[in-house]
Length: 240
Image 1 (cartoon, rainbow, N blue to C red):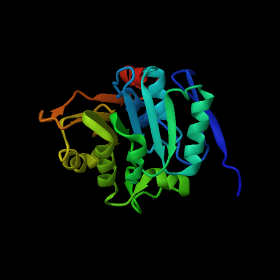
Image 2 (image 1 turned 60 degrees about the horizontal axis):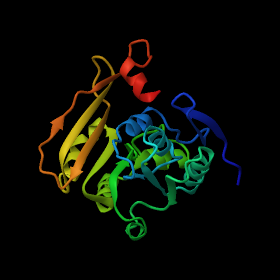
Image 3 (image 1 turned 180 degrees about the vertical axis):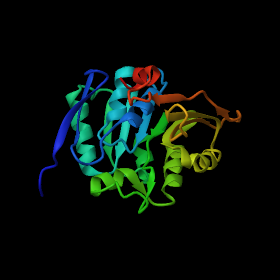
Image 4 (image 1 turned 180 degrees about the horizontal axis):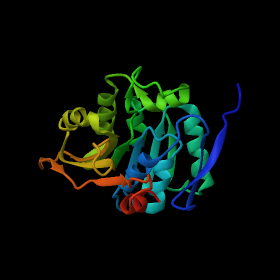
């Protein structure tokens, strides 16, 4: 088997470095938006479902250096790179990588419950997106029709009462996310992200509290890019 080609890249202007596949799924703006959405106290525990190479976990660790982070990753090559990235950034005391499937209920017996559960699930249904080529890229970006429900069930399983769940996803999945979250959460807050001013929303972050009865809120959103393609000031502050 040929060795996986990788690149070394940085987050937060070099405060964190990561190795990731050169031609498979690579972290991007969505990972940084998700990391910025985490508001955890020191010694609280954050679980990421499907952590990839660990970009969100390590960005979260830079922002919240006294918070405990755990990531579950099914694909062996991603999990291996994530573990290397934890070691590379000397974050092993507070960041852990678990090779496993988020649908495996036995994992809960080993890991227990968390104050916060976060996820960036695959956005595209299998067969609907021709750009997801290659096995590692496909498993990171494509899902079966019922997979999102499984991700929400896993979040519920690992989440403490009154704990927070945060998903970043395609805006077209908002209704499905709402239906699933309402089964165990309230205080749902939706944060829209627009590619440019005047364009339709493409991404949303949805935040909810387990067991809460507080009504839904639509929060002020963020325009990500200027018309010349550069980040807006607010987006640049979040990403960089």
